[in-house]
Each structure stands twice: as C-alpha cells, then as structure tokens.
Length: 394
Image (cartoon, rainbow, N blue to C red; front, side, top):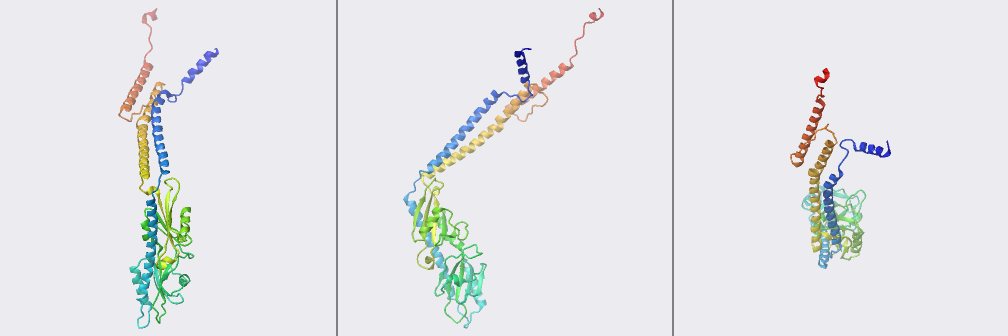
C-alpha cells in the first residue's frame, strides 16, 4: 500500500464520524450571520446614542436667571429657618408669662399639666421642662432624653433665647435648647426650656426641592437636612463644604460645579441672619440642585436621546431574542437532526414540538426516518434466492 492509498483510507475513516457531531457550517453561517450582523448594528446605534448623551451634557449653559433664582431661594430658606426657630422662642416666652403661681405657690402638678397642654399644641419640641436657678428640673414632659446640665448650654436666663446646636455624648441628634425665663416671683421655677426637634426644620427646607438642602452650624457641620443625616456629619461633597465655609463668614452666593451633565450642579449658600435669637447662632443654609433636573433645551434633547436609546435597546433585546428563541435555535436543532439522519443514525425520534413550517419539516424528517427503518427491516428479512430444481437434480 503506497502513501496515497494510506492517506485516502485515513480520509475515509475521518469522514465516518460519530453521527450528530459533523455539521454543515455553511448552512449555519448563512443563518447566523444576518442575525449577528443585525444585533451588532443595533447595539452600535444604541452605543452611539449613549455617547451622544455624554457629549450633549458638556454643552449645557445655565442661564444667569436660574442662578439668581437659586440664590434667592436659598436666602428665602435661610429666613424661613430663622423665623421657625424664633417662633419657638416666642411661644415659650408667651407660655412662661402664663405660669403665675396660685396663692404664691407654684406646685409641680400644675407645672406638669401646663407643660402637657403646651406640648399638645406645639409639636416642635422633643421635651419641655421647667428648671430652677441651679438647673434642677421641677417638671417635664416629652419622650426626649433630659439634658444633664442645661445651664451649661444656655448661659444667661435674663431674656428668651436659644443655644447653638450642641453635640452631647450618647446623642444621635443635635441638641438645640430654647428657653424663656419666668416672671420674677417668689417661687423655685426659673425658666421654661424646650428641646427643639431638628427634624422640624425640614418644613422650611422643603422649599429647596427638587434639590437638596442642609442646615449647618458655624463649623459647617450638618444639624438639619431634607434627607437622613447623622448629627454633625460633614457635608458629603467638597464644593458643598467650601460653600458652607463661605456662608459662615456672612457671605451668600451661588456657584456651578463643572463636569458632565450628571455631575454638574448649582450650589447656593446663605447665612441664617436677622432679627431674633436664631439669627445669632451662626447657622447657614447650603442648597444643591442638579443641572439635569432643570428644564433647558439641552436637557430636553438629552432626555429624548436617552429615551430613544432605552427603547432601541429594549427593542433589540426583544426582537433578536424572539428571533433566536423561535427561529434560529429551532432551525439549528432541525439542522442537527437532518445531519444525524443523513449520517445514518436512526436510533432517536425527530422530536416535533411545533406546528409551523419548522415543525412540518421536523415531521417530514421523522417520516423519512421511519421509511429508512422499514427499508432496513425489509432488507434484513428478504429470503436468499434458491437455485432452480432442475439444476439440483442434475
């Protein structure tokens, strides 16, 4: 046997592969290629839309009128906070004037009853109490934890006022005390103290929506916010902290943080100053609003492109997924069944699970498989041809 015949024999054995493992890749490529090209094309269009969104955001110019409006809004929020805090002090002063002693004696039950009545009307306080000259609590109401040494935070009790926000050990909220002295009388009661609820400031801060707003002390630490916060935490971003530092000096203004449209924001700041004790504690307001939330021609175009990209991506997934599940994958499976029969493997049925064109083709292949099996059976049972009787006798 020469080398040519040996190679020919090896090639023949290589062609006799296990049924089902050999594939007609020309047929597979002719079906898969349009599907793959279409999928890649639609994904590239979606990617181009996403890139266009990013480039659109860098060209947004915020009009000066919007900046002025944000600064005016921040100043208005600062004054709302000041008025809200001053109203609390005025309420305590009005309440303290009503605590006149009965027959020259102010009893503890009568003080407690008066505090409960005030607490029902004014929900801005976590706790109300009446103290004497040494800071001892004579009567109290509310669920707030009492302050051990309120005089240390208050200072003088000569006139109504409020303390700056204090951070006490074991407290998760800023401690803000408002107080009003009682009329001079021969009783132990000296002043009414209310522990202000910092969450009450959220009513004033709501005017900054849809942006964010923080109430900070003179050190730039958060003592109130529209969202959740930890007492005396630092502002979350460096531009906000810089704005708070400028507001602590009595300055108000507005700045724009550069960057992409998603990161660009308008930051405004204003000190809480004015008439009343709340204007003397050194608080400030810092607000921030994303440029993407403002209705501008560029942001409108960006939203339209974003909607287009999302719709296109969903259509691509739905359409090409549908083609893969209902057309391409069943067709490839049918191709494998046809190749299995072509290479002589008749041991398994051709599964028919559909009633469309692909299902009819599968049924036709199943009939072909049955006919081939019958032909094999008939060939196996066919009797061998016997010789003529005349020849046997001879």
